[in-house]
Image (cartoon, rainbow, N blue to C red; front, top):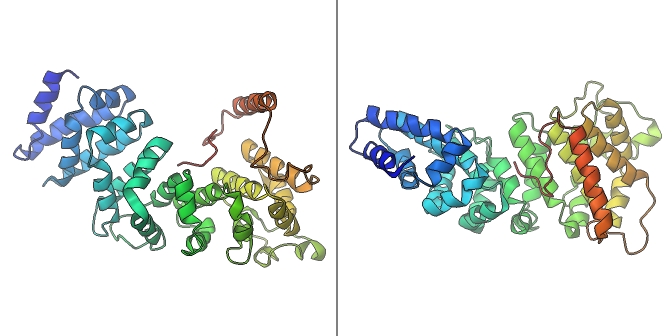
Length: 370
C-alpha cells in the first residue's frame, strides 16, 4: 500500500462519509488484514489508518463497527506486529479493556479476543498486565465467576486471557495471593461442561501457577486441595479394589461406570503436566503418590489414544514409580542441568515433535498461552 492509497482510504473513513462508502473501504482493509503480508503493510505503509480503525468501532453504523472490530481481531492475531500496533494506537489497550469490562457492551467478545491475542507473547502480555493494574485483574476474575456478567456477550476467551497473563510471575502471584481466594474460585471450572475454551483457559491458568513451587504445599493442602480437581477430569469409571479405592481422594472413589473423561486432548495434557509440576518438590511428590494418582494415570494410559497425551502420562508415571532423587536434586524445578545434557534433551524433544506432527496445540513454551 503506497501513501497515496492510504490517504485515499482515509478520506472514505471520516465520520461524515456515507456508511456504504465506509463499508467498501473497510471491506478492502479487512481483506488485507486476512493475510500476514497485508497485516504488515497496514502496520507500516498504512500505519496512519490504525487509530482511525479504532475510532470506527464507535461509528453510527453497526456494519461498520463490526467490520472495524474484525480488522482489529485479525491484526492482533499476528504476534509479529503486536508492538507496532501498541505504538501506532496508544489508546488500544485501555479502550479494549474498558469495553471488555462494560457489562452493556455488545462488542465485548471482539475486545476479549483481541486482548487474548495481544497477551500471547511475553512482551505485549506485560503491557496488557500493566494496563490492567490490580483492580482490573480482580475485575476480570470477578467476570469469570459470573457467566451472566454481560448478557449480550459469551466472553469465551476471558479465561484464556487470564491464562496468558499467568505466563508472567506477576500474574501468577496475583492468582496465588492467599488473601483473595482466587484459585478456589477457579477450581469448579476444571470440569465445567459449558465450554472447552473456558475450561482450557482455567486449566492452563492452574498449570502456569504450578510453576511456583513454593506454593505447592498450599495448593495441595486443605485450603485449596487442588489434586482432586486435576485428577477427576482424567478419571473414568474403572473399578478398583477396596484397598486401592481407599488411597483415592473421596471425590474420585466409586465413580459411576459411565463417568466420562475430559474430551479435549490438549486439556488432558495440561492436567497431566500440572500434576507433574506438583511433583517437583519432595512434599508434592509424597502427597501426589499417596493419593492414588498412579491408579488414575494407569487407567488413563490404557484408555488414551493421543500420542502426545500418552507420552505426558508416561512421564508422570515414571515420576510416580521412581525412587526419590539424590540429595541436592530434590527440587526438580531448581536442578541445574549440564549444558551437554540439556542439548541432548532438546534433541530428543525435537525428535518427539517430528514424530507427532499430526497433533495440534503442541507448545515449546514453559508456560501455557492460549
